[in-house]
Length: 226
Ligand SMILES: [Zn+2]
Image (cartoon, rainbow, N blue to C red; front, side):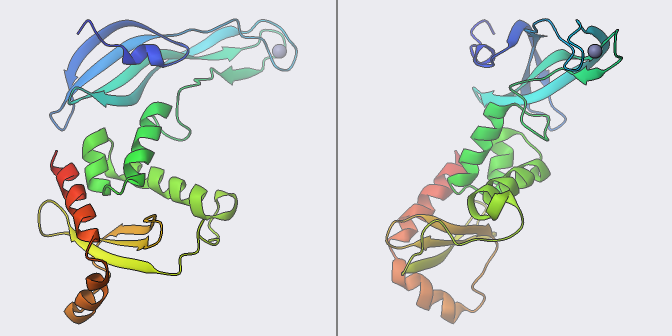
């Protein structure tokens, strides 16, 4: 692999070598190793030059490409001030908060979720565990719909007068997802795995009102297969 250009997209990361590996789930992964482009560390308390105190091998999941997964690996330092004894962890500008993943992978995951793919599909596309995808989704939805990103629900970004509700089969043909959308703008208001409409009678009555939506569903099924 001589043509890896992705690492250069990470600001502050210098790629030194790249290895091929296999994940526990038997998927090919590129381990992009390197170092952080660190400037001199100045103590935020007394202004002295800080010294390296500890070094930790850090591995962050990164964007998949060419059908393979990738991860960036680098040593991360804890610095120590010889004068006032303060310590601080090195800042990694491209690491997503709260996860061992890069910010580009977080953005990619959010966009896939936003496009309506299921957790299972997003998990498979990104190589991230389902729980991580679920957490990213929870945060994403909280930022969209909750005051201050907290637990309190606020009004949706738009107030639709006509909504459509439908279910579609996932690619395996057994599991279902439910989606609610604004029939005026086509914006998805709610999308979840599982059946919301239990009775067949309701199902027909409600989904019959938005037949055009069937084609959207088909697209999503195709994306899941790709
Ligand atoms: Zn100091």
